[in-house]
Image (cartoon, rainbow, N blue to C red; front, side, top):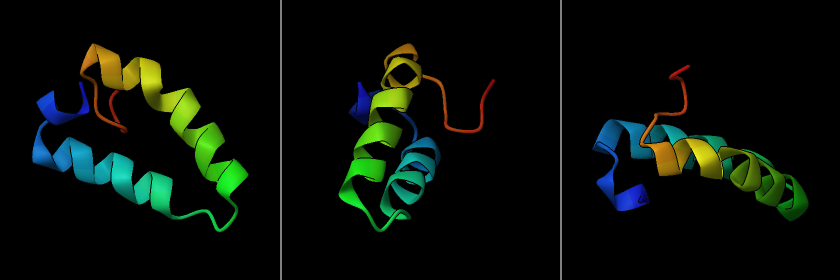
Amino acid sequence: AFDALTPGRQRGYILHFSQPKQSKTRLSRIEKCIPKILEGKGFHDR
């Protein structure tokens, strides 16, 4: 599903996931964003 996103939307998620220093924070961000990724929405889409 992530590969189906546009390059700009992929970049938005990657930047959001790579910012935290702790791995548990990264994992929680990824888990929260999985439904939006499966719907094909970008990080900043509502």
